[in-house]
Length: 269
Image (cartoon, rainbow, N blue to C red; front, side, top):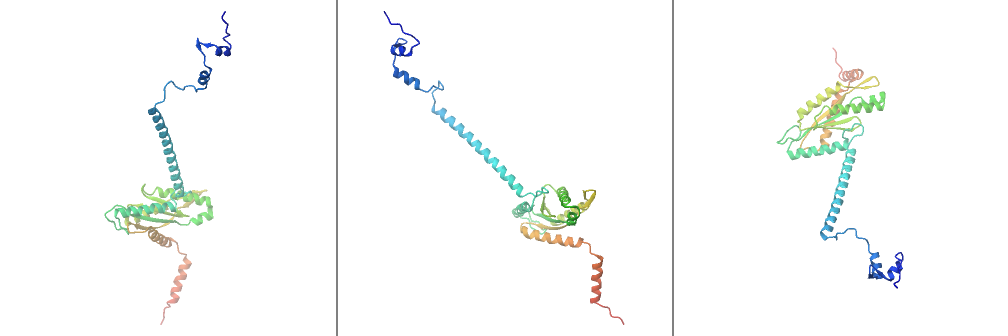
């Protein structure tokens, strides 16, 4: 009589036969320890290289995006370092950076300074502007009124020049204009027009109209000029303009005349 085998007993199965074949426990255990196949396809060297190249391309794209983001960040920080916080104009540093580029362009194009034009189309005119009576506005109406006044003047100046011109606040109540590709005569005329237009403006503050007045100095620049010397000359002319605009007290005029007469007495017969 044949022995009856319980199919629920693995030991009984392993001890006898499996599917009618002799059962080898060692082979069975090795098969159980093998990791499961993820795909029925066998990896090919070409496929592996393609996958690696795609991963490198993704890393390269991420690196390029990071570099572009950092470049934008650096440009933003540089713009902050060259921008006047109150008015949004260029500050002194930004102005000098633009002015150096303008002088370099004039040298490349062979444009002479002092109003004489060479064969090129570079060069231009620097206008230094100093507000008249600004301290009195601060003292009378407060610094908030002074800030509002400066912002209005900045907007007025920007609206008075061409898109290719440069407007900057050098500090305090001092501004600068770079009228590019302009000769000395045209630049002086344009500066006088801007000053006249400013004289028709008022800044409204707490029911008070604060008139806009400023003195200016004009100096042309070209390939042969240094920016420091151009600024010095324009600044000197601005102060001469301010001295001529400042009203002289009648008492001082009478005192000066009386002193002149005392030094030159008339002789009478």
